[in-house]
Length: 184
Image 1 (spheres, one colour):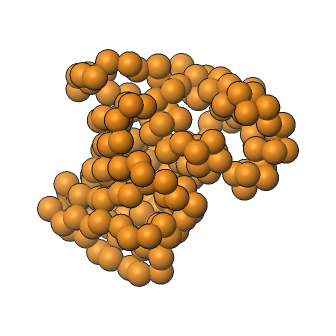
Image 2 (cartoon, rainbow, N blue to C red; image 1 turned 180 degrees about the horizontal axis):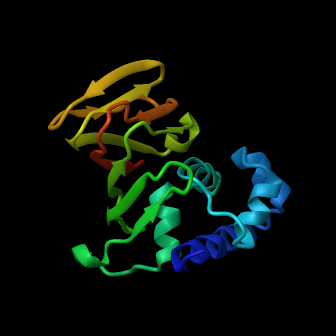
Image 3 (cartoon, rainbow, N blue to C red; image 1 turned 90 degrees about the horizontal axis):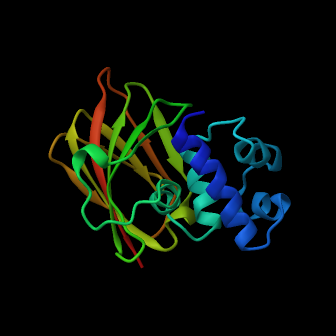
């Protein structure tokens, strides 16, 4: 596991300990199996984006917020070379944290979703955030609360009330898009 992976593992444990939760408590709140949480905390498993989003939401954090804590970034300026990148081991989904600070309500993430891959995020992860997506290249199929939307380069979509969202790339080429989240 790389440095970011071990920092994610450490911060999952720190967040759990700060709340005085057992692994069973976190499993119940996140919907992630207790055995998986144990493996993540011991650096025996690299969690997928969906699992990290569930854990973050259980801690009342966004995925970016959890990753930011693991990265320990504190400056207001984030140079392109210093923007952390995380890759989902399950899908190859590549996530670059463009901007996020604990004291600022806006987060921006640039994503590369490989051809033929999809990521589903449960509704409750968006309980305290609103978000919008802007496609830079490729084609993104977004299913938000059961409504299917096909976005092409330059298209954007603002999401409504929290609902399960599936980001899918049904095309033969990678799709690049930006997600902007505003914490409420």
